[in-house]
Image 1 (tube, protein in one colour):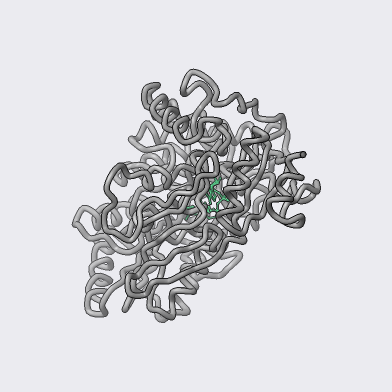
Image 2 (cartoon, rainbow, N blue to C red):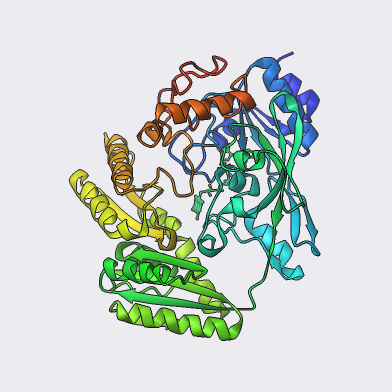
Length: 474
Ligand SMILES: Cc1cc2nc3c(=O)[nH]c(=O)nc-3n(C[C@H](O)[C@H](O)[C@H](O)COP(=O)(O)OP(=O)(O)OC[C@H]3O[C@@H](n4cnc5c(N)ncnc54)[C@H](O)[C@@H]3O)c2cc1C
């Protein structure tokens, strides 16, 4: 039987898609790199995922897990062909209020989990800006962060257990309710593995109580240095607010033109700071933030008056990428992380690179943890433009590495940064990672050609890797 026939007998006819338009819709994530799958399957249960994995092995075709496709590194783009396995129908939530945990299907949308948990006085802390669409499976696979991960940690800090389908269709549960799992931390290896080791079908996550009170401050500065120095001063003083986000002037203008969030467009930089906790504590902490900001020459500090005002400010911050999409035909977003003390000089270098290439760059970033997101705006229909943007982007990432940074702060490696891995890891490091991949995935069928550059293990896994198809970009 053909691959599609086998899949249709394991699932149902209508949950195996193969029409050209359907395949096109699943051919890329939110990055610029496109692939071409043979078919897309919409699984509903773990048993179905296991069956699809076995069928992929029988036919020796790659299998690429996909949540919402908001990834920015081509992680969910089927650049090697094969099956795209969409988890969006796997969206059960089972809350254990007493233990403040929930078993959550891989396809549950991040924000839906917090909305569901709210009546129980609970929420899921990791809040990527894409949280209204991205899935828990994608969050786990990319170890995603968000504005409120500064104090609470990225996704990995909130995952207690995972149900995963491994090679051969074997279903395992890693970790669990117990505070510590004996043996090697295999769950920790799966988190952040970008679908290259197996397919996460559900996750046991930690839920946190809703914050009793909150203060959100919008602070504007005449220079970026003053804004980042304020952030450094807070962290150096051992004070870690719930969120510390910075935007440069160009980004503020883009957001204001679209959403009217009330950002100070005549300032060089704004800092959005938030503290959560008991009323007395947040009142004192908000005063402390104000004091530190004024010591760094803040022009003004505005306290959100009520929940509606706070929501407006966060909507503005979390819609920054969308704001750029309103004014630019295309944009390329980079994600790196540098020590906070190197933020300003790294941003200067990024700007110089953009100037040299004649490109426009916008900045919005999780300043508290040094996670930079330079956005290059461009028009991909211009001859040679994409190549120019790629080269500039690579130089920007290299500048971050030179300044003591890492390849990715939260978006992962995928295909986008795969070939830059050698700038960060030695041959031995890569070989160790490749051997781990091989142990989980001897046939090399789980999301091949992602994360590890060609030759990491001195040979190709299972011979499935083939060159990136021509025109994979855009
Ligand atoms: C506007 C915008 C804002 C963003 N803001 C943030 C942010 O603040 N912080 C942040 O960290 N990221 C952010 N991102 C990136 C992205 O949203 C996150 O990486 C998110 O977690 C991806 O989830 P997804 O469901 O869309 O995953 P997808 O894009 O579908 O997949 C991402 C990766 O996970 C793998 N995968 C998906 N599901 C599974 C599964 N069940 N099992 C195994 N592997 C799986 C895929 O193969 C792929 O490698 C943003 C993206 C956009 C477009």
